[in-house]
Image 1 (cartoon, one colour):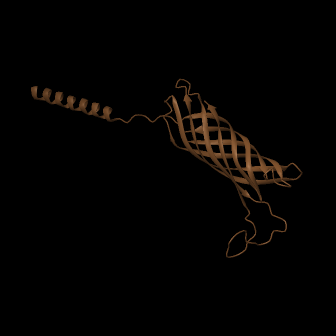
Image 2 (cartoon, rainbow, N blue to C red):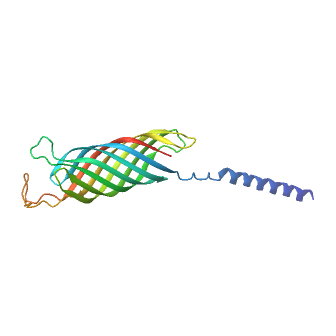
Image 3 (spheres, rainbow, N blue to C red):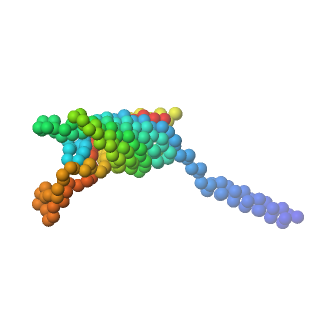
Length: 213
């Protein structure tokens, strides 16, 4: 009887130790993905290209997005100047409006529970550009977008509201309009003559404020 009681005590002690070990090694539950709205308002400084017209192009930008974890889907709106150097003779001048959408991925960011918000991201998207020349005429075309940027700001850890600034380098890539009467030529030393390229690349530096919750 004494031996049976001793065996029962040893078995109970082993079971309790095993339960404590399992409880100690149990992994912590994963944190839920963050969900929040993000709004942005910024200034554009860069060079917009429309065919053979290219010059300094200031403008403004806006965006509204919804973020889930490291991915954000955004709607975009840009308004900027296009045209030639205003000091040149017969300078062509116009305004461009671009509406689009983009997917953004956060490569590195601070923890959601931190009161400091730092986020390095990349973005791919597409949109539609409308160019209106002041002397008459319009150009409508689709364009792609590539961007990289950095957010910095403050976060309220109680309600997760954010406010701060951002800076980004953005590029719009679209098909150049067909140039009437374009002929193959050499614009510099070359091995063969070609017509002007049909790809327009506009590059902007963007700086502004962002807020969300």
